[in-house]
Length: 177
Image (cartoon, rainbow, N blue to C red; front, top):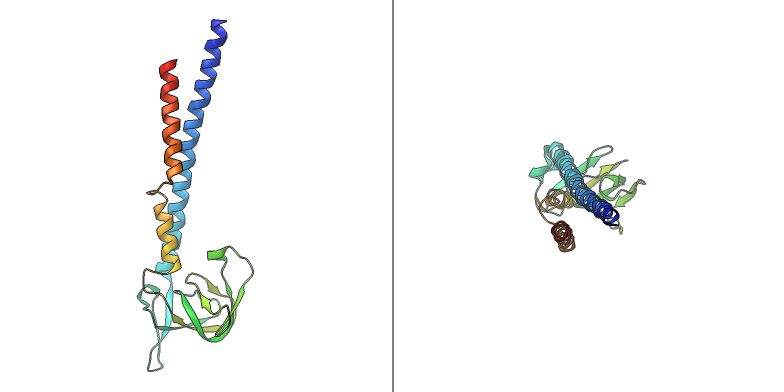
């Protein structure tokens, strides 16, 4: 009978150990994915150029990170929308799959319900003239990058509680054995 109890204890110990390993491994994988996503979004943002129309009517190409609230940008077919903004002229279908995951392009035009555009999306047809509505560093893309990077730092309270519970149960179990 003592032998059966010992085998039972060993099996439970192994199961607890595997559970702990799995929990740590899953967390590491999630953290890695969050960081990788943030890196790819950062690269996208850094490489994006913006065509700005100056008050004198001239076009100028600058880095998207230099755009300020109130700037007027021109986006042609196939170009990435450099920052969050409001459509003031033109009509185009916009591919928002990078942000929303929605595969079908959405039609954007001024004055309509769908007049706002998000940085990081792509104009799939025609052209749009947009007024930038967010300050540098405050766009949806910036918030998504911050969330991806925050995956490593912030843990949900229930996640912390679960980890504490698992560790304490394992310790108690090892002491009892």
